[in-house]
Length: 350
Image 1 (cartoon, rainbow, N blue to C red):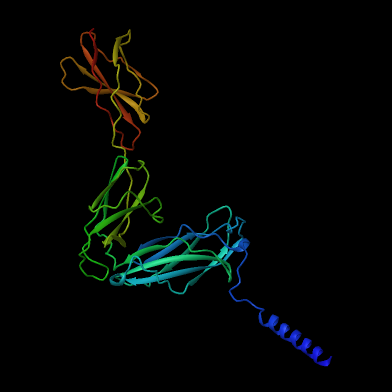
Image 2 (image 1 turned 90 degrees about the vertical axis):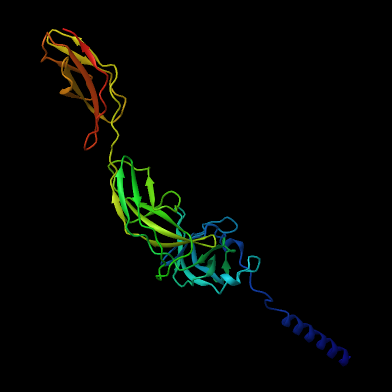
C-alpha cells in the first residue's frame, strides 16, 4: 500500500514539473490589432547638394480602422549598396533602424514626419523605408520603399537673369560644367526652374530642361515673382539634384493693347460734329482717345479723350468749309497705358 502511494506521488510531481517547464513564451508577443498603426504609403524624398530629406504622413488609424492619438517613434531603415555591387533581384540589406521622434496625431491635418541626412557617399544606391510605432512592441508594416543613386552633385547655375514681359518672364542662366568638388562632369545635365511669391518657399514649375532658358507664361501682371534654378545631374538614368542659384525677381507688365474701337460714326450737330463708336469688350479698357485730321492734313492729331463709360465725343472746333476725318483708339489700365491701333476713319462733309 505504501509503495502505491509513493508511486502516485512521484507521478503527480513529475506531471507538475512538466507543466511548469512548458510555461512561458516561445515567440515574441503579438500586439493587438487595436494599437498597430497602418503602414505608411507616401514615403518620399527630396535631394539637394546638402543631402536628402525624407517626408511621410503620420498614420491616423490602426490596421483595424480605429483612430490613433499619437505615434511614439518612427523607425527609419536605410540600406547602402555600391553601384558596382547592385543586384536588382537581391534582398535589400537594410541596417538597424534609426529612431525618429513621433508625436500627437492631428485628425484635422496631415502631420508630416521628417528625416534628414547628409551622410551620403558618391556612387552608391540608397534605399529607405519607415515603420510607425505606438509602443516598443506595436509597429506598422513596411512603408513603401524609396531609392536613389547618390553622386557628387553639380554646382548651381550662375549668371541667372530674368526679363519680364506680358503675363510672362524669361529666365536665363549660364551652363553648368563642374561638380560641387570642382571636377568636370561627363554626365548629362538638366535644369529645374523654381518659383516663389515670397522669396522663401520655392516650388518647381514645369518640367526640367536641358536648355539654359525657360519662359514662364503663367504669371499675373503687376505681381512680384522670384525665381531660382537648380542643376540636375543624370547618372545612369537617375536624377541627382544639385546646387541652386541665387534668386532673381521680376514683375510682369501688361504690353498688350486693347482692340481698336469699331462702329465709329460722325454726325453733324448744331454745335459741331459728334463722334460715336461701339464700346470695347476688353475688360481692362480705361478710356478712348479721339483723333482728327483735316482733308489736306496727312497726320491725325488728338483732340480729346473720354473715360471708358462713354462712347461719344463732340468736336465743336470745326470749320464749316472743311472736311474732317475722325479715328478713335482705346487705351488700357496699365501703369504705362497700352493704346490700340486707330479705328477706321469716319467723316462728314460740311
